[in-house]
Length: 318
Image (cartoon, rainbow, N blue to C red; front, side, top):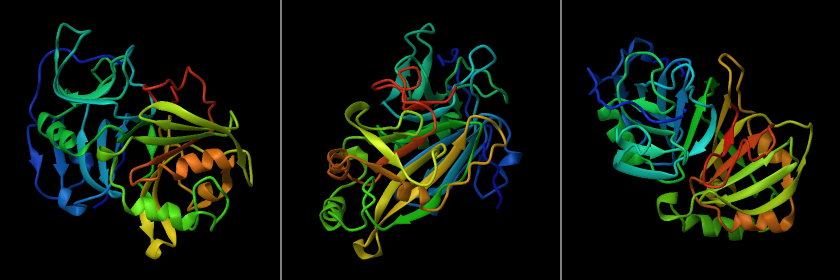
């Protein structure tokens, strides 16, 4: 089956249950407002990533790099457009109510920013109609709420690529395929998904020439970066999956994204990880925190407060 890919303030009061729930794989272009498809059996375990395609008004859920669900959604209406970029879930509240919009209900709320952007259940008229949040069908929002955790990446984009497997023989940000690798992999084997770990994100900006290490949204270390073979990396999110080849390498899933619709977002196989280096102390801090679900985000935008703030968003492109 071929699938097509497809955030400010809170929705008005009122909820709409899905009009139908697909029980078999289907072409998501045929989904009507409120409809979705959900097949968790396709990938029973692994890190979760959510991609919202604003032009297509679709939310895609991946687990272990495999798409397990797609739903219609409703993003921000004109004047309240949903911003694009990479976010991580900051807070979860099954029975949340808006503090801004007359105590409006926001069931199954996965918060993306502290100033009001979230994924939650809401009305789905078939077009962008929210004040910036991403509205989902009630039943689909319940399923998503059950498998996400604080730190789960959510990409809000104009276009994106499906996750690709990347196997890299060496440690992140060292340029060294052997130094300290066995010890880091040993730590990795004993760790689980961020539900039991701090949410760790490594940001790498070619524009700033800097890398930042975030733990639960707070910057804990920074370093100048060295970018080999060119001055840009592109906009990508890489999620650490597991040790690979008997511990000889690390396996990642890479997702490319862009603000605009129709932009090419192909993820170069492995080349991003090979090209990035940082100071030894920074690299050691990253390696000490390795766990499945850890994120590395690359961007050609500057790491500026207008685009990134502690415990709020990771990278905002618009």
